[in-house]
Each structure stands twice: as structure tokens, then as C-alpha cells.
Amino acid sequence: MTIFFQVVLPVIIVFIAGFILQKFLHLEIKSLSTVALYIMLPCLVFETFYQAEFNNAYLMMLLFSILLLFLILLINKIAAKVMKFDTSVESGMILSTAFMNAGNYGAPIVLFAFGEEGFVYSVSFMVLQQIVMNFFGVYYAAKGSAGIRMAIATVLKMPPTYAVAVALIMKFSSISIPENLMSSVSLVGNATIPTVMILLGMQLANITVKHLEWGRISYSATLRLVGSPLIAWGLTALLPMSDLMANVLIISAAMPSAATTTMYAVQFDSKPDLVSSITLITTLLSIITIPIVLNILT
Image (cartoon, rainbow, N blue to C red; front, top):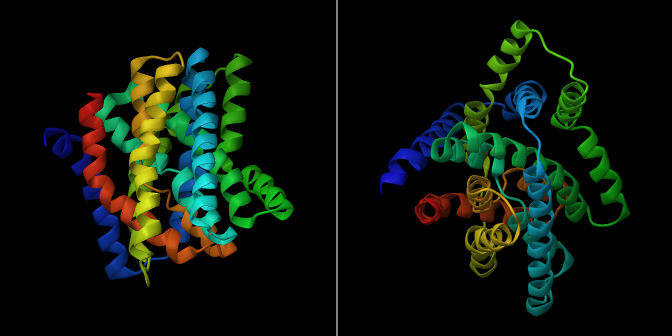
């Protein structure tokens, strides 16, 4: 229970604050989300990548992400064949199980559990997951050649993508940044995590569940909250990396379904009610599963 009160509860309280705020005031989420995406997150990402010491660990993180995605996609393909899901259901299942909430849920959990050093890995993994989710998430939601074109366009529209590019160019070109300018970047970047935590609570408040398909929800929740961290544990055991990075990646893989997938499901009609219900249920269940994973890791 100590881990729950010290690590998980502080994060949940912020989510609840955003949830209650949205339920009572019905705020327009898009404006706040846009500020976070276009100003706050790029500053956090730029600072993280500019100051990071790149080594073999980051290559392992990339390989880990690719393998984790591939294995979860494979499991979903097999399940779709066995359970005879149609294309829209299969796409909805992939959206719900392959893409975790590594940003506005995973990053603060890592910060509380593993400190600043682990948080640096978490932000790097978050950026990687955003790129993967914005490409493959759109592709599977849209399904087909139009999906590929839209997926590429979506990734190119992401401000954090350019923040990474600029940070790496400046870092490896040995371009120094004035201290006062870097202080401004840090000031804005530090506001990112609490803002996106509140945003998640607000997004959850907007999810409406009309019909719960418990069979499919149970399958998706089990794969997302149990299967994914187990696969992650196996991959971190095989790939050479530090214990800290392994722990960060495992707990990130144990996060519930990403709230962004609901938006894709609605936009492309990939079983939005199912995806929304899975996002909500996995987020609620994660209050139980995440402390268990953290207890095992620490």
C-alpha cells in the first residue's frame, strides 16, 4: 500500500481534479490540449533530447518499442482470426491494446517512482510512442492506402517531432543555448506533465459508455494491463539495458489504453464505443494493476 499512497495516489488525485472540473464546468478541451501539444510538450521534449547523453540504451529503447508493437499486433491478429472479429472490431482492439498512455499517465508515475533519471527515459519513450501511435494508430483506424498517407501527415504535423529534430541538430552541432533562453524553455516544459495529467482527467469525463461488451473489454484489458508488461519484461530481459531503463519501459508498457485512440476511433468509425469503454475500464483497473507492477519492480 505504501507504493499506492506515495506514487499512484498523487497522480490519481490530479486526474480526479481534471475529471471533476470538466463534469461541472464543461470546458472546451481542445484549446488547452493545443497549448500543451504546440508549446509545452515541444519545450519538454527539446530540453530532454538536448541534454540527453545518447548511447546504446536509446537504440535498445527503439528496438523495444518496435518489438512490443509487433508482438501485440500479432496477438491481436491471431485473436481476430480465432474470435472471427470483423475489420472494424480488429482495428478497435488494436487501438485499445497496442498503444499505451505513456505520456500523461506513464510519465508522472515514472517521475514519482524512479525520480528525474527515470523521467528522462520516460519522456524519450513517450515521444517515441507518440510517433508510433500517430502513425500506426491512424493507419489501423483508417485501414488502407489512405491510412498510410494520413498517418505520415499526422506525424509531420506533430510539434514534438520537430522539437526532437531541432534538439538533435543543435546538440550534435555543438550549438550552445543562452542560459536565460534555456530557463524559459525549462519553465514552460516543467508545466507540461501537470497540464496533461489534468487533461487526461478532463478527457475521461467526456467519455460516454452506452454499451459494455464485456467479452471484448476483458480480452483488451487483460492484454493491455497484464500481457503488455509481461511481454515488456521478456524483451527487457533479452535486450541489453540498465535496470532503471528496463523498469521504466516495463511500467510504461503497463499503462492503460491511450486516450488519443478514442479520438481516432471516432474519426474513422473503428468501434468508438468499444474503444472508449476499454480506455475507461483500463484506466480504472490500472489503479490496482500499476501498484502491483511497481511492487514487483521495486
